[in-house]
Picture 1: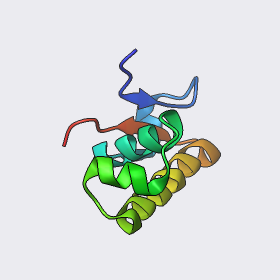
Picture 2 (picture 1 turned 120 degrees about the horizontal axis):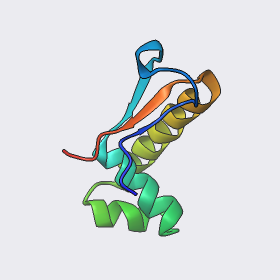
Picture 3 (picture 1 turned 180 degrees about the vertical axis):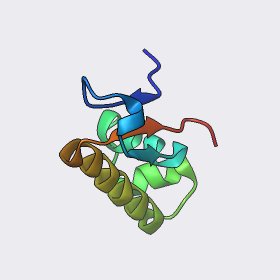
Length: 80
């Protein structure tokens, strides 16, 4: 499955606010949660500092939480 959007069921896209996850945020989530890497190891794979990785993962979590809790569409922007 290669989904671009996740949205609340039964609500047209035109009625929803949208939250966008950028490619680096998606990659950070993948490394941290699917690959179970520590932040330092994940940051090395992304060629960024551990602090930058921490900021990216925090922003990603906030965006996903906003979409889920507030009933917004979540768009995955997989291209850079």
